[in-house]
Length: 456
Image 1: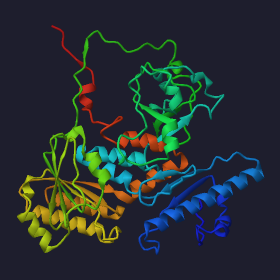
Image 2 (image 1 turned 45 degrees about the vertical axis):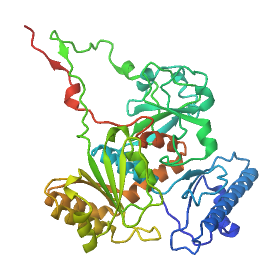
Image 3 (image 1 turned 180 degrees about the horizontal axis):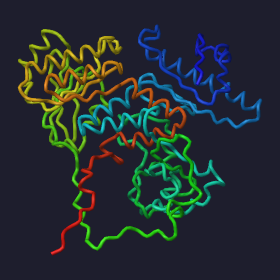
Image 4 (image 1 turned 180 degrees about the vertical axis):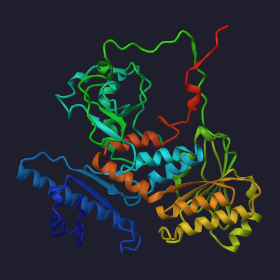
């Protein structure tokens, strides 16, 4: 792909016309950074509203001139304070929402972080895709009224995870209780969306194999092939008629599945906390029922977080890298008592992540391990991919395990996927919120393999 850069004012109609904003199929609007002169939330909100209105007006003009249907997709990234009053068809994403929830999964189940990072990074490995049956008509009419088990046979290179359908369609089956609503349970959901879109769409993940696909639904597929399409023949149809399934005279015994989740952490330590409330919401999960999360902050918080399953303890002290912080690890905390230490991004007072974030993370691991006799697990926010080998080696050389979370890559990968298909945001919300919807889990693969038992 070719990247073309133009300088100008995104709130200027003349400059928007210069980049053909009206003809754009996908539009991404970002909030100004912290160095901008628009430091007041009201100014940023007004500016973003102006930009969205001008872009939509130019798109309407383009559609009327060309006779084409206006189907442009747009995403705006803004905090709750800066969110425009009217989204005008754009999808709203809260900044850092994805990385905070993936960060929490590293504390819940360590190995799952790599799975989520691969899914969110659309340039590497498998990713989620929405397959619209109506858009592929008439090539996929043979899938109508089939069960999920039957539909899977027509997608041999993908895993069918569920579907996305209109809310009205699902209301036709009120007795069904296995459908997950896309409406967020709390105000601090992984990523807020346009209220109109949230009401009109609904996600059903991990449905029973006997359930039939509702009309006008989009399949949620996990695949490496972005141009995936359905096969004309099912997988069973390709098997030679004379082929017989393998049989054995010895009975097969399958052991009960054993979860691969590690032992639940009893105490967690959270460093560099700066109003990452979505992270606390994700940590308050039944998977951590009874766990204590200590938040070390330099100043008292505006309000104390209250968890349903997790007990949050706010402790004032130095959480940065300094002699005072090292002393506080001895004075106010029993550093050996923590099973998991989470090191968030090091930020300035204005919210910007400092350039030395990765170096400070290395220093934090070294300082904490100097004061410990046990082997904790570190979850570390990393900004640059080149720092990953150093972060991992630091933990290994100091007898600790480390799960690095590559923050920038997660956010950019997720935003780019949602930019191409905004409805994916509802699917990601269902995946990343551990307290509702579906979630990924580990299962010991050896327990699923049939084992021949000796006959007496």
